[in-house]
Length: 521
Image (tube, rainbow, N blue to C red; front, side, top):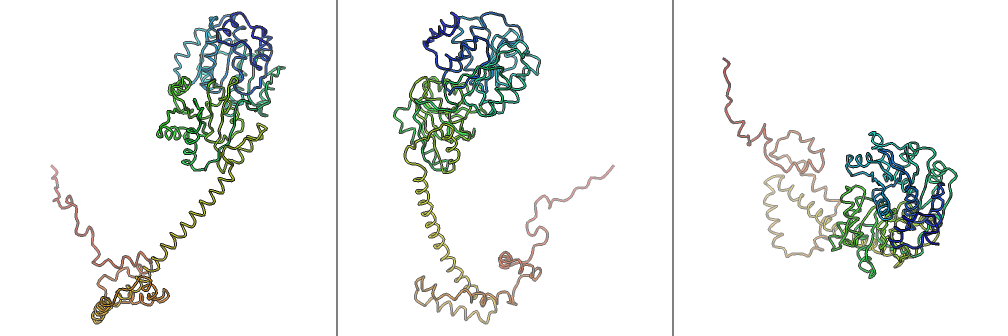
């Protein structure tokens, strides 16, 4: 079957031929005739099968007749992300070269004034994200009563991003007699409910089993540690080991991990850019254009780049994190292996990713093989490392405990001798004599000192005279309170000298200045 058999206009066929396409994809071959018959269509197909052209080409044929009016678009296409919306605009520019249609892009991160000017000139095709569309409607700059055709693209992504309430509100603003095209890669129960609500007697077009992956993609699981530096090191070794890597998308679950991983790869000499939802529109466009042109071979992104982005030559996809939702795995790896090309998808799996991995394999209906052994080998190595660390900690504990016991023994005997010295000057000679005798004695080994040290139970006996010694020069005030305060009290007992009164010896200079009293007149 060729595009000429689908009922498209001559202008559209000329543009398709100029773009280099000769045969339609399965989703295009089945959906385009029903769209031209003005029927509602429910399209289900795996990502990368040409869903965008499946509604772009018939829309161009249908819009050849008619004229746009100010603030009242004729057709409306809703996309979940700015990148997808901009990509649809590129499709209209590519296939609509023979048409004189006004196409308006309404997305966030762009000036309201420029978008309002486009709406006032009249719009044949309005491509928008739900949030910015509602902003224009609430400002009174947009009317949706003239919409003849409504396209809801990537409906499952709309569900994940929380746009379903906005979609329901927008659908109530468009005429009831509209034609609706509803496209999604997966069909969870929530999406089926929305399809029943929005569509009237739709024609179901399903060219692949829901949530299936392309057969041209080689999928592998890579066992890695759960620590961040271990995963980043494993990813770097994986990238360097791929000889056929032309460019690659690296997906993370969180936006902050995207920025962290991009900086880490850049510090190790990789040419890499980042793309996530918190970036401004200009930075996102620069990063995506650099990746498409080949100037930047690696792009670290969140799931904002997982849906519908048409970058045909992506050779590798790396899942730095296992996605929380199994449908996201289908979309992520769908960025490679597009249009019949071969692709490679690697997913880094840690010890805590068992449940998410099982959900993914259940969804796609097949197990994913491991690259270099599964998590069991990783767990054994982790246990061995844990035992090594435990033994090391045990040695460290024993090494520190033994000197502690020795120091306690020496401190106990030292306190006893010090107590005797403080007890009175009559025993000072004995203490000095004992010290000279000890100096005259030959040096003993440390082990002999430990054996010769008194037992720990006898240590308090020599400490007792310290508390009961009557000859002390410090004041008696607060003695009982300091005794009850434990180690801190005993430490303070060693501080001799009178308690300072007021500021003590140190008085600030400004307090020493004479006071000047001004006389009242």
